[in-house]
Length: 219
Ligand SMILES: [Mg+2]
Image (tube, rainbow, N blue to C red; front, side, top):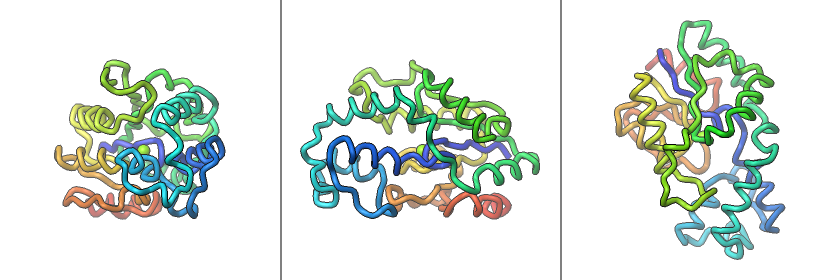
């Protein structure tokens, strides 16, 4: 099968270190580790009372968040992420079984160097048929610079999934996984606190890489 694989929070442990650095920078207090995730930031932007879960977050303006994100991503952040424990072994197993893997991230194309270096360091690079990052032209001009753009990322990944005729996409983002499924792409949704509401006949929730070979065999 032809399998799309997202990077952040599917291969690389990303949300937890991001939120930890965010909390350190702005002096906010995070909940328990199992509850740390992107939903803490995104729900705040929709004015839901998440400031109760993350005391102090209401003081951080959207512009401060954008600047923080850009500064972090322009630094060593992506180069220092940890890989999920079972990921390398399972990817190796999938390739050995004849599957084709396409690494597809909504990270900007200008992050290619740090991204590919990281993939090489973690021993993952050679498992990919290709590594796709989001080209500059895919960015929506109306979006504030530095802000995460879930709609643009969903459109980008879905277009690519259809072009590459992928059979399955390994993803964690709630909007992206929904958009892929609605376009007819089967999704293995890596379980995280921010995607618990996603349900679709084409979405199979997995609790980490160790479950992937079995659900793939059943797909
Ligand atoms: Mg992701």
